[in-house]
Length: 613
Image (tube, rainbow, N blue to C red; front, side):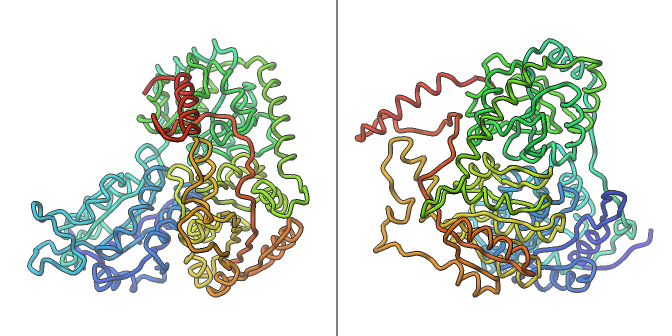
């Protein structure tokens, strides 16, 4: 057996550099780059190895480990899980900074490879700087904190362990059922060790995402349920996008005459004006989508984990509605007594389509959905219309941005009030151009994900929409994007704090407290100059005071050659109506009568919940 002698760190880098994927007939690196901040846990060995291959496996330096991992997740989503970015961090705080981003990737089933330093396997210098000691278990380090938010986790304490560990990590991240973050911790002294690795370990390999087919017996059950359906409905989730099943879904829905509603992650499976599209469903949904959900007797849930914001905490659907869950993940397919059609979305739709013969849904059902959707569109047009108000609403700002965006532009949001307003009000012009990362709804994801999505290079312009609270939480990748030359357009809607949580606080009877800046323990609120801050990081920036100025600024931003920031003051109290109920904890007793009244209403709402697992 021919061997190659190199260090563990060099072997890891060499292996990653020889993994490839095939996209539209073109061979591309599976790992096209690394985000890294170096410290004593990864600089001398892993850093040395990465420097040697920077022309084929480029390393990009961000300003914070968490934001770099957000960028990697945003990249993976823009590339529909076909390419994976690597993030490396040193031991201690460098690594723990990645935890939140790992939570995003784990919750939303997105690939992310984290390669981090660890303490010494031989323990002679213990305790080393930044090592967190556990008195009862010396094997525990901060890296163990990643076990709950990793789909695959390993600690490398011998050089030869990577021979089995790295292929398993890759297989996990490429598995549509298990897809999520992989964490590899490498002890510092192991990174330096040389080993005679088999040469075939480094041979180039082309990976393809598997496409599992459905069990024929379960498929027959799904067909039987549909043939008996009077009011069938399709829920398109994020799995439609990751399977690249948009065309298959359109063909299936059109042939069968089944209306389609979308989850938050599934928004963009259809263009807004597709004749089968009835709008979003759930708490951030449309009146049209929720009306059909309430009346549907058979629901095909495709590629969705059916989180509470989709189901209205399980109050949106008829209690006796039959679910057919088409999902690559067995865990998701078995929820709420569904017929578990465990399969790839594209292949499952194809086989279901073939098995249904000439069956079609009653056209009156779709017609009722179209009528409801027309009403919803009129409502959105009313909310987005320029009323001449001194301070515009989120809906009005979104209407302007949507109108000026090109068909292939990409929009990103994640937390605060904007996700709800965008899911309701953004009219998708082309499938696959909408990213609302609401699985973890993580403040700070948006701006960094914009950097990652721009790096993916799939779209004309990348728009990121955030509130002032998110900007203050994490803005440093404006600088990263300027340094690396990956432009995006950032819209900052300044509404004076955490307005959407203030809305929830008030809706459940509570007083405004600690959310809007004016209600916090501060001497006196004063506005942050987001434009000056962005300019100081090398971005172009402009403050606008009206919707007309906003439209001009967007055209200007699209013509620029670097990241551009536009700031506009927005109303913290004006929201697009929502229809679904949400189960949150409301105090059982309170000194505030408004809270007691909210509690009574909430208890009544819980009686409408569908039970199930």
